[in-house]
Length: 308
Image 1 (cartoon, rainbow, N blue to C red):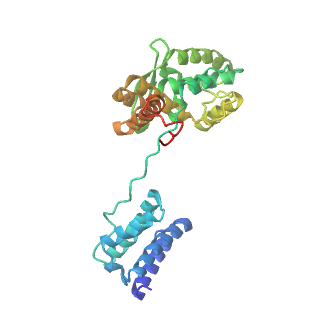
Image 2 (tube, rainbow, N blue to C red):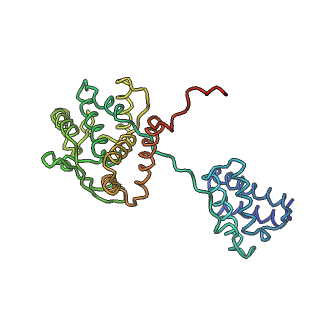
Image 3 (spheres, helix red, strand yellow):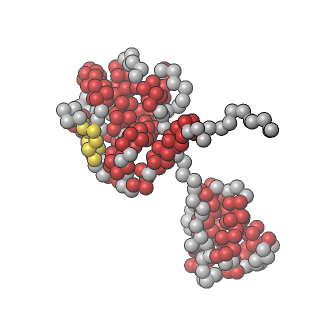
């Protein structure tokens, strides 16, 4: 057991979080649980006072937590709780330094975005619309894949943002409030032209949005997600597809064909090229699959040779 003074310091910190900081019960329980893990480490290592903990102790503790299966995000949360506790102790002159201040959690493995192959895209977009709303939906889905725009950007599009003559669209306020001009493909343009004829019939207000509901109001992001899910179900597509998968597929297919990372970065509206580089991993996976299937020395032996 830790020294009684150390226990009192922790109790006082919890009181401060509850009364002064007014953190939620959920947050409070997380903090208590995370610091309790550190307390168990101290007991095991016979560290009696918080001031006796060193940077190496914190590093060793977090390494043990990681070896025991704790993920990167959870380790980041525990480190944050420990830093917060020691900042409290520092502020009250109860310790001389914060041993967790410069400890970093292991980097979280970056998940590759899910994409559709060209056949899946064709299956999704070549299906025929059966109503005015499906004509609108198809125009939206074509635009996702044609220009690689974000869900929020598509929902925010106004009629004045598209130029069918120049085959471009204007994103007025993308991520980071940055604007950009994007090209539109022929199929997306044709789909939008078809929708515009039906949009006039449906429109009952002065709404400026390009994509409107049957009430004449701007179509929200959640409605667009639901319409894509409904489209996939009606068209017999088994896989659940999110609008962002169309953006990922746009980027992956374009990079695979052009090998121009900077151009894909500009089209996606990424401020940092490192964000775009994740698609090079997808491209490499595609090439690796082809290699495994095609190269004579990469193929696995179908039968084991008999020993001579």
